[in-house]
Amino acid sequence: MNRIVAGLSAVLVAGLACAPASAATQTGAIKFGWTVTAQFTAHLASDYSPAVSAFATGTGAIQTSTSTGSGSCTNTATDAFNSFALTFGAVTPGTGVTGCNYKNAVGMSVNTNDANGYNIYETLDVTAAPANYGVCVYTDGATATATTPASTNSTAPGAATFNGSNVAIGCAGAGTLLGPASGTVSNPGVGGDVGGAGATASTTPTAGAFFTVAAGTPATGTNFYGEDVQLNIPSTAPSVTNAAHAIILYFVPG
Image (cartoon, rainbow, N blue to C red; front, side, top):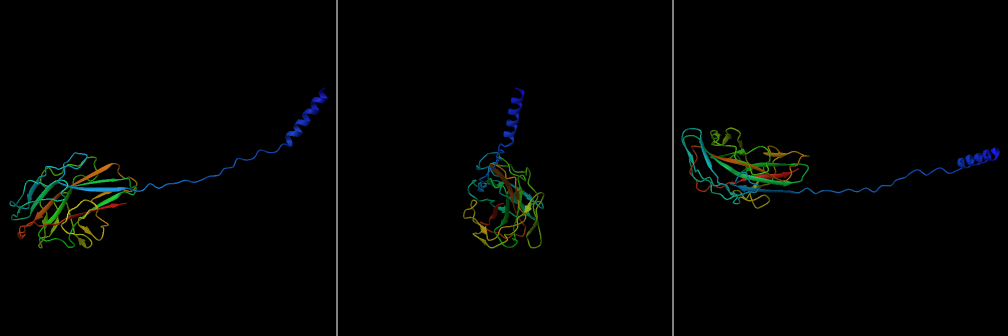
């Protein structure tokens, strides 16, 4: 009996040795991909109300500052938020420079999913440094806010500095002097929302952005920015009625 069992065992071992090997696992692949398109919308408002989640008419105020002891500005602003205009009213020149600071003057909103970020630039609608007036901008915070920002100027910033040609060469405090556009300007003095029929220039600035969202960190939701705008008039400015110019804002996606 033991011989029979031993013989069967030998047969089984021999059979296993002759069995075919298992096939290796193999794979195939089908790639898939997609593109999420970048969306970018922006809007402007004038004389806006702070601390709200949508633009609304504010109760604008115009502050007076002078480089000496005289000169005055109209106190109250009456522009609607969708008028795309800043009404400074009558300015009475003094013995030095008279600065009229319009609080919560320009509101901007941006909504985008652009992963490359964006920049906002500003210029005046002229191609040469302006005479007999100068415009300073005071940003109401350097970054976007979830609601419309409040003015950072609780008191009037000082008047701008002018040179002998009556062209502003410097702004007081944290103000930034707006310079001329870098290309040919069309529709000077005409206001309008982003992408509308407002003043435009043929070239876009490449330096000096007022607001920047870096690539890779696009802000989500509606992002608000705000500015005070200061009009400066030198003592030697000639009389003028209903002068009209425009601030050009460039919203440049990444």
